[in-house]
Amino acid sequence: MNSPSILIKNLTFSYQKSVAKIAPVVLNIEDFQVDYGEKVFLYGPSGYGKSTFLNILAGVLETKIGSVNVLNNELSKISQAQRDHLRGENIGYIFQIFNLIPYLNIKENIILPCLINKKRGLGINIYEQADQLIETLGLTDHIHKNVTDLSIGQQQRVAAARALIGNPKMIIADEPTSSLDENNTIEFMNLLLSEWEKRKFTLLFVSHDIRLKNYFNRAVSLSEINKI
Image (tube, rainbow, N blue to C red; front, side, top):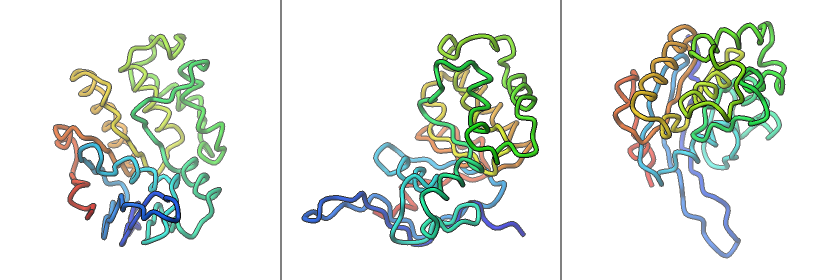
């Protein structure tokens, strides 16, 4: 049986304040688990710690209290450099603001994670896989365009392809449809989940839009598991 992709026990997190001030608790999560290959919708309004939570899972923020295990790595027991490698090699991140590189074309943006982290593309022809993703995501006709000349929906598909390149074990999606209209949202969700069906990576999709939960096997309210 596969180990969970995410296993959290008794996590408490506060942003560091000055010695004279007590920092308010942002996250207090007793138990949270996402199994390998599961797709989970995590929802909640602004201000409930969604971005903080994702930054902890991605190893950007360091925790002091509790256990956060991601892809069989106890994050508190590995260095920042090791957390960076874990994220770069195994986790695809789809950002709310797409973070595309404006001076790179579509294909260059997509393969960038594999150029930065060589192990991510190990054993894969990343150029062929990029071409396949471009075709699957309906971007073939725009291949020669600068990313700044793409529509918002097209830019988000490039961002998704960049997260999917190299067969990562887990995809974290942080409000990826917040800038999309209804039609583009439906199209994006169908494309993302068709890739999940093919690869069965772990998918943690975070949004305030509760309507999207019907795309997922399990929906979790952050406000219910975050006991602050």
